[in-house]
Length: 118
Image (cartoon, rainbow, N blue to C red):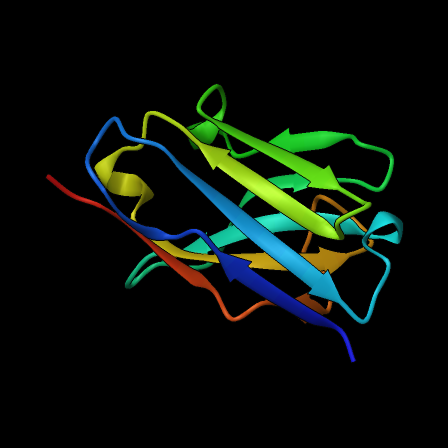
């Protein structure tokens, strides 16, 4: 079955960087649009960044210029490079696979926690 496993979260100071990874199994990642979503306590889950199977990308306005999504189809892995992290980036980050970079697909990972704190 399809599995998405996130890693790379952690505790970081404001201004720091993290790189999240999402390793896919049971599917050929090259055929899917992939997205990173996040959910902070008391808030709705939101799209952070998406990358289509044809390499189009989109980003939430709040992360443009700071975050970068990429994919390595050979490794069946998608990444989220996060730079200049802010306190408000603190959330549980989820990987998602589907057909569109504008809305979530059917497959979700279990999430990885990112905490930005001084």
